[in-house]
Length: 160
Image (cartoon, rainbow, N blue to C red; front, side, top):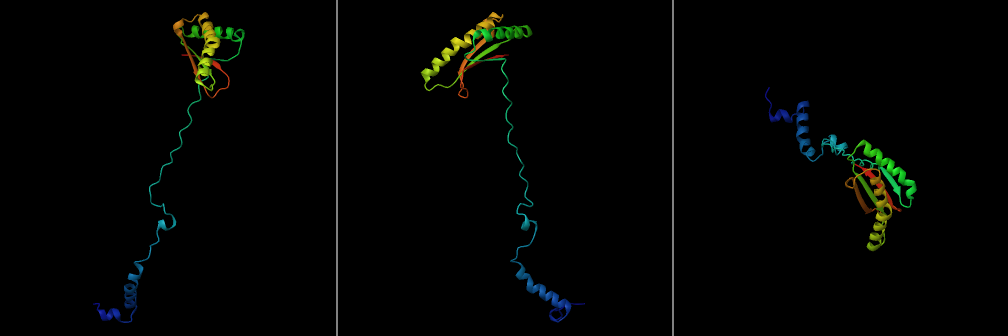
């Protein structure tokens, strides 16, 4: 069965369907087709991976000893000697790090004076107690620094 233009234009079911398709095809070219992005604009795009925030660092290690400024030597002296002897018994070449922390002062001269006083009145006597417990002078390291987060001076003794 050969199709001719006349048969296409004849009022038959096939002819009406073909004619309707030819007339509607140009009208459909301007329409947006419905697909998955009609309802979800991110559909088909690669996912962005969730990167969690970095966890907080480990908590600071507790000091071997911590002595608040103003504590009398009669209170901390025996404790420092006993702790130093225990550390030396466990490890004869232990390093004692005696660190003094002072609060922030309004000007550099006052800060230097505070650190000097802390060294003379707190750090040196504690280092002397450690030496009296049997540590060699080379095993005692002394530091004095400023810590703006504290209100009162303190001395920490760490071992390594």
